[in-house]
Each structure stands twice: as C-alpha cells, then as structure tokens.
Image 1 (cartoon, rainbow, N blue to C red):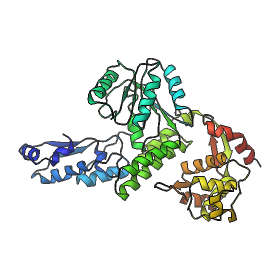
Image 2: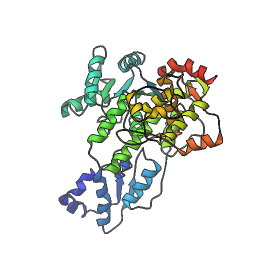
Image 3: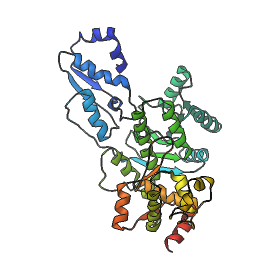
Image 4: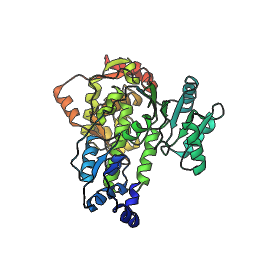
Length: 412
C-alpha cells in the first residue's frame, strides 16, 4: 500500500482486524527529511505501528541512504534494528562527467556509436525533454516520458521501452520508479540532478544485468540555476530548503572533483573504496599534474580578507584585478589581495577555485546567492605550508584552453 492509505480511517479499521506478521517499508529514505525524496505521508507509518496492540516484524529497504538518513529512519520508525549493507559500489558502471559541451551533438554521436543498445536520457524539464526528443526522432527511433503527457501516452511509451520496441527514451525524473529493465546499457544525464541520491538511483538503472554500462553526466553551470529555482518554488520550510541546497552543493562538487568518481559517490554514502576504480572518466584520464600552491594561498588569503562575503564570480574578479562598478562600490580594489593573480584569466582562476571547492578547501554556502567560505582544511593547508597539486584532465575543454597558461604560471 502507499503510506497515504494510512490516513484513511476506513482502511485502518479493516487492516487492524488482520494479524500482520511483517511491515516492510520500501524506499525508506522517504521517511527522513535528510532523504532525497522526503514524503510527509511516510511519517504515518510510525503512528500506525504504535496503534497496534502487538509488534509485527518491521523491515526497511533503500538503495540510497547516507549514515545520517539511516539513523533518521531508525528514529522515525522507533525501531532498534540490525543494519545490513550490501555496499554502494556498482563495479560494472563506468561514470564520467563532461563539461561545457554541445549536449545534443554529443548525444547524437554517442547514440551513433552505441547502435542497438538500450539507453535513457534524463533531462530536468519537460521543455528540454520535448526539444531533445524532437531532434533525435528525426534520425532515431526514440520515445519520451514526462508528467505533461497523458497517462495513456506515458504508459504506452514506457511499455515500448521495457519490451525493447523502443531502445532509447528521453525522460524527466518522473520516469523510472518501478522500472525493472535489466539491459539498459547507458544512462546520460543531460542536466545535473538535484542530489547524489537521485543521480545514483537514476544512473543505476543501467547495467542491472551485471554487464558493463556507461553513466555520463553533462554539466553546464546554468543547470544549477534551474535546480535552485525548483527548490525556491517548492515553498518548503527553511530547514528543508537548507538540506536541499546542501545536497545540490554535493552534487555540484561531484562535477568539480578530479579524483575517482566512484570513490566520491560511495564516500558520500559513508562507504569506502580500498583503491580507485580505475575505470571512471577521471581515473582513465591521466591528464597533467600542476603545482597550484601559490595560487591556492592567494585565493585563501583573498577570501579570508573579504570575510567570506562574496561568491566565485566577484572573488575571481578581485584576484584578477577587474575594474567593475561593484568592486569600486565595495572598495575591494583597496584590498591587499586585489589583482594578485592579474597575470591569469578569469577562467584560469575559476578552474583553481573549482578544484579547491571539489577537494573541500573551500565550501559554497546554501541559498539563492551562494558565498565562498574557507574550511578547516584551508586553514590547515596554510598552517602546514604543504604543497598542493591539481590534476588537469585532458577531457575538460574549458581547462585545456587555459592549461598552457596554468602550467607557465606555475613554473614562474
């Protein structure tokens, strides 16, 4: 039953006449406000259990729960349960992140090189779904799925995909719940999802037969703006909004990191890898390692002197020595760190800041207008006078454009 049924007094009067041996809670993360799909109706389960004059066995299942969510599930159900973990690593899934590319051209080329394979293209909005479907359907048999379609059309397209009548489907996150199709060979996210849990759940629809499969995330900064609009339009309380901003920040950091992507994901869920996966886009990309110690020191100094009051854009402009009205209004051109990285482009500065966020030297505040703040790791870095290296990935076109300058500046 859906947990909403527990609000129906007529249903409760019938169910209480039955001796229930076990209550199994599926998608148990929905009971926690820290879970990525919190549903208030799940709170009814605890009340229902307490209303019984006997104690049935209670079990809870979820594929995506952080340690914090696990504890919240136990508290919310008021149970003292044994916890069984199967591990979060999916060895047959190859993860990769692509930045600032032409989404449609990449998807078209990918499909052409993966002929006769079944795949899902996830998008963040109905408009984007219709757009990509219209372009792909000119040359490829493809289906689509979003909440703006009729029930009959959605059901028909979903069945065609499950039965392999249609190999590829373009869909919003409304598609997937209850989908059990074993031979999905790839999942492409055209836009960044709202959190790691959603991403892993959606990407994890690939390779359920245990065979090698690909999970590609395409990242554009504008997608973060869209996700923040979703949070703002949900009209949730401030505490829940804060949680959602934190989760979105962790998702964005996934696109920033240049360490093993599988390791990043399992670490997020409180698990660990003994060694890097060796197969994700970051592990396979040898790239080039650059010394960014001096740059990082200057960035930390600038953020500290500005008391964590500004975002990436303005911090980068101060370091560059830009002559904007906002800098003059705040008298930031009088700061000692103004123009201390004047020999670098704004793009180069942002690359290093991005790296430092992804590796937790800096953190981004929650909210509509995120600010850059120093972490304890940044202070430790300054105190210890350690050397900091950044791996420049060959596949990152935005970095490649600046790679030569980064290398030249590092050697000065």
